[in-house]
Image 1: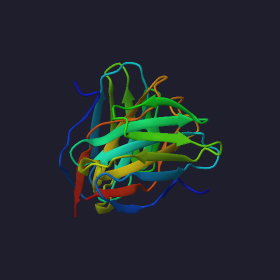
Image 2 (image 1 turned 90 degrees about the horizontal axis):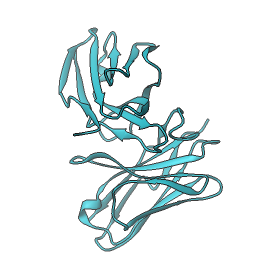
Image 3 (image 1 turned 180 degrees about the vertical axis):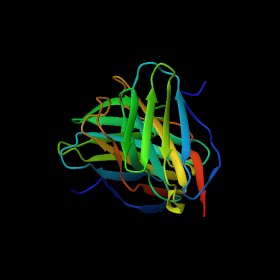
Image 4 (image 1 turned 180 degrees about the horizontal axis):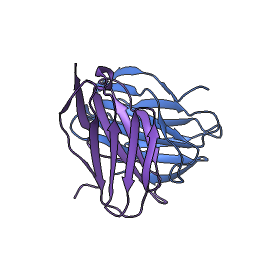
Length: 114
Length: 111
């Protein structure tokens, strides 16, 4: 059974650019949530999608956005990149988060903003 | 007050001994509790998942949940050097579709 797949794994962007990260959940999982991990702030929740609907959103500026497609694959976008956006971005997959199901992470996308 | 609290460590345990990791949470509505292991430069790996009071065992790992006292712990028996990592406690609140993480405990197993 394939795990959670995130692409790209590593990327370097310049301040002011935008970036799109992709996540393919485990087959059959309909919930995808996104997290940002930095040394200073730890793991912070960005947003969660279920059946193409955003159900929950963390405390991040509007530059951070996401969406989910009908096949449950999800993308997140960060516009007008800032140096502080350099982080590991993690995607998590679940049958239905918040309903007593297990939650698995992908390998993450390492974003460096220069 | 932080929602999920862990001792950041580092926690050093001799090889073969029992490592005990603790986590407290503030929301009594919390429903599901997770322990993840994260090696440096890697993503979190699910170790244990518990939602009922009591103990849950899986190999060398035992998760213990006490909802009345609002704490969850992870015991690692016969600790191995490969267990050296950061252990993250995470909580899902009922009807709140997100994982809330503690800051993690860095565990070092000393050969």
